[in-house]
Length: 235
View 1 (cartoon, helix red, strand yellow):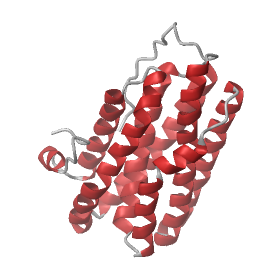
View 2 (cartoon, rainbow, N blue to C red):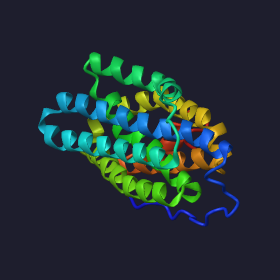
View 3 (cartoon, rainbow, N blue to C red):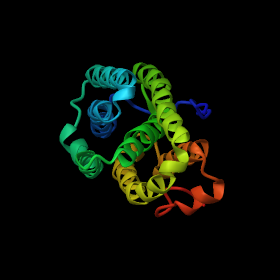
């Protein structure tokens, strides 16, 4: 899967020093940093659940930690304090869903959450953010996106290889997890709008990437459409 072509024409009216921009960015920067922390934790847990892929999963965890530090640098350069408390709450339901599945030894929902849903959320959000980011943050986000595609590919490849065995489990997990992903996007929507990102753009980016990932795994277009949850995957 190749990255979407994103229009990087920056709005000349954006004022990165304005209070409105910085307040909104403090919350989204919190989401970026917290999301990368969630990914780091998830990959560590997945390394325990998939010992045959332990090396690759631990490497992915290290990359996510590097991403987190990159976004922390963006916040420092912008002169803002990331709103981690709000971001922790945004991810709470998805975190609980992953933890509960991991505690029960349910690999499919755990891998689906991290290697597909979280990675597609990250790619969608960062792609939508690029046109409104300051120059330094844009460079950081562009580098991060390339890594996230590699992590997404890991999940796709594993599911492809196990497809006939795990197909029903993927369908069941998607139905319960996708509404959570949509809620995360909706909660980011108001602050994203203050930066010039509309919620429809975020949802469209996620829809495209997640739908393409499911098709790459082996689902037909009709099956992907049938797995829609409140419009998170378009029919």
